Length: 218
Image (cartoon, rainbow, N blue to C red; front, side, top):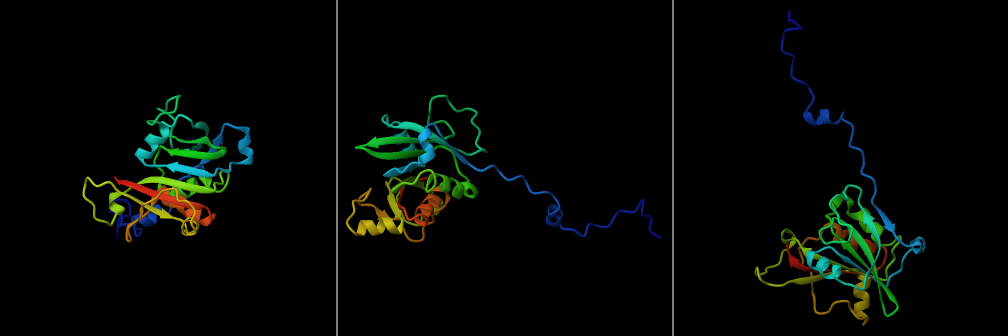
């Protein structure tokens, strides 16, 4: 007769992944949110153009645009504020929102200075487009991930491509002035993902003219 005390117990009939099913799931992350400095934000903003900069060159250029005014920020709770400077800096992990008046028309600029995971991309896109901020037109500036690009390029070749919503293309075909001229469409077979893709999808969903400009390989 087996000794239940000293004998080696039989192997578990559960697989490791089955055992993991008994562990409670991690607590969900708090939702991202917008913070505005102006009381007018309760009414929302309706800019003629919303520029969203994600790539390093576009962030650097728009950061040094002196005529813009800081009006708010998008906060991702998982991104710490530690290390950010009091004055806005390109080294900060932040997502600041600026306003710029051009001939009486409101232009808003968003500088996305932290990485947004694919799981959070649509929540961030929803906040930036179609709720508090309802733009007539959106320009998204990002670089091309080399793993997503299917074209042939020499290492020193400067590249720029575009994708656009159906409404943007329809208006361009009808003779409306385009935000950018002379750009080829993103090559067939190339992949688009991440925050920029979520932003363009949001424009399509809300029937907003949207243009996604890729420039440079990373």
